[in-house]
Image (cartoon, rainbow, N blue to C red; front, side, top):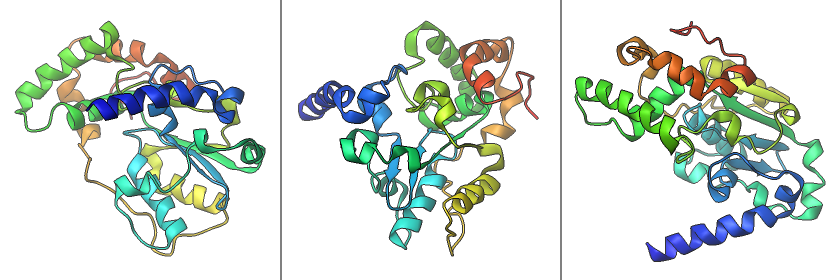
Length: 239
């Protein structure tokens, strides 16, 4: 534990001084090391992929890893196949403008519920989950919003300015948008998209069970930048 803590402190001190972050300072709110780990850069395939947890992250990353390696790899390994922005040297940073920059996002109502069910609600009864979700939203309102990238606002996980992204896919149209990414890269995966469902929570079908009272309005306020920046309707339930 002490070694891991030391590594986290070291990375958080080092990352902001790397060439990429001198050009694009990160001020999103989660730790610098955690934010950097969400960046996947491949100069050979020609892309900069900004991973957003609970937004098709594992499916997109494993599909890209298979494209690079020619075979399937587990999700955890796939996330380590590519360079992170902090690993780019000055010469490599000069190639950034030629890379296809993209990310995937998700409706905030669904994403925050999925994050709760995945990380905190597993193994509980449905009644306990519903009560726990209300307490969870209260925690986010009182300082925990950026404690974990799985529920931090998606806007605050972007490593590049939003206008620098060439494409922003959506979980709601995941297959279609992943194919758009592959087409933009000028490549096709012979085996198609590798769907990763190990962390699936079925949140999109449970919204009305969990959003009781004024929770929808409170989530809308917490994630107001995501609703605005990614063109999600504030209407609840989402359609």
